[in-house]
Image (cartoon, rainbow, N blue to C red; front, side, top):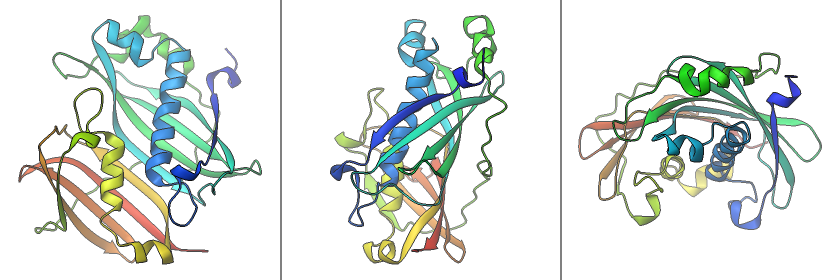
Length: 251
């Protein structure tokens, strides 16, 4: 199989209802597009969620890191390409490239996924999936020149915000939607902050699941100028995810 056939490319437009007050695509929408591209690519190659569900399995996102030079502007066309970089027994690395309207790469993303049993919620052996056929789609030649997700450790002891998981937070599996974590984390910063700065890197590390009615508390450290680390805990103590947000001054 040629390397080109291992890469999926998907086209989008920055719709007016997908941008923020600056006219740029929001990080939550971009995250949703990345997850959709992962789903499209997997489905087209026979290991999408619908196929896995037939055998009582599904994909879960473990880590995500997005590096951006800029965000698409309202009405601009852009595309996202995605490919599988590595497959291990319990995890797979999937990368993304984001290309702007002028054909220039404006960002990259790295992600780590696991396949779990829907009944036990335990990881399954990826190398046993379709007799190891997923490894046929490993693409080593396409570069992804950004750092892998880092280790995040938050020392703050007092929350900077709390929410209760509501209807709009819950996905088809009955869990807190992974993209909604992104949106709630970015809501920790005031609007005035986004008038002066842009997000140059965003990371998520998912640890545990949360559900409707859970109370989520957000703890935040500023580890360096413009660099923030956030930990989300449910019902007082259990960590459900961690995030790193790196801001640059608007250009």
